[in-house]
Length: 475
Image (cartoon, rainbow, N blue to C red; front, side, top):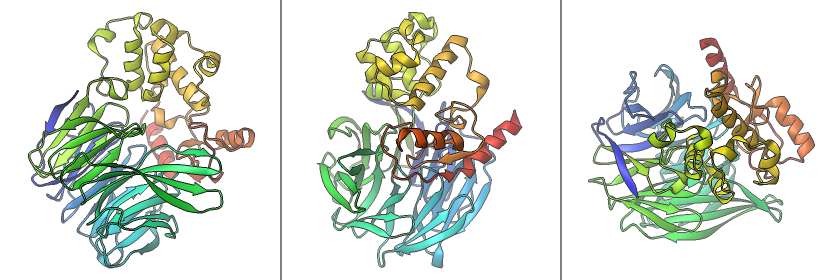
């Protein structure tokens, strides 16, 4: 089942976009404002609403660490907001003052792309907030943009109906014309990267005015070439599809339509799992929470609905930060296999649920896990993932959060607070020395995915370094 657990009615005009970070939900509207909510209880933050745009706000997205929010508007600006104070950190004016319809931040927080009504694209260095490149396609409107999980390229969609893949220098890598008849509405890369047989593979979802939701495979060959193949066409909605988004684990795909419905699919098998009909007008926005089984949907009825997937989809039922009543009264050693699965989801480890179920891991066995058993018996090859899991188990044993350090500030390899965070080609941030040693000894594989790194280039993560510095100062 899937059900609405909360309805937000604060905007005075159409909802255009919604976005989750680990702790916050952001929504933007034709009423020129953005509203920010606590993602645990959906109370509005004291500094909300954000009022900095002079016209409709079309899109918004969080930085990976959740410290910043980016928004764009018909007023031809892209704004960077602090999620600590609610203040404006930067105002980025689009070239030729064209209305900005879409914005996207790379997973490594190094680059920001804005797309405008005149077909132009602007690539910004996010750290310095300076314009790096401009380009695009004439006589169309850019309405969709999504970065690949490696942060090295991005896809755009336009009212022409075409999908185009670009590198960071705005070189066009491939173009799929007439991907959607009458125009593209939205596109979203799946978070995972697949590799094998000298091919690196990405999945992309796109939707459009043709009433279709499509899943594509994008292949990058060792020769440097690309191709794009249609994998599935989903026809569950009967009117133009305005929005689509992948879950953070890539297992689910959601879409919203002019027919007022929201559809949730098994992304791997293109099977419809849920249909929601809780909006009174067109559904224009959708987003998954990064760790909890929650979806936010926005509509022209001026509301945002928070929906809970209750049937074990993504492994559990729990809201962020909330243990179920039954499990909270038990000692960890008394947990059932189901209790362990719910805990994994709450801790952002939902990718391990199926493996733990297959090995019948209950509370007692959870507490006895070691690096050796995780690698040999459960087959968890990722050192970063094993380290994160064992740290969470130690927190259970001690009954408190280990040193109170936010998880995103810890290096996935060493599990220590990062001093010089850098972003690798897999999109994850690591302590520089740790990832350099890893690359030297592990033949260019990702510590988090075990897939080959497309490049050994490491980019300093200045945004994360500043966030860590702020956190240390506040302690």
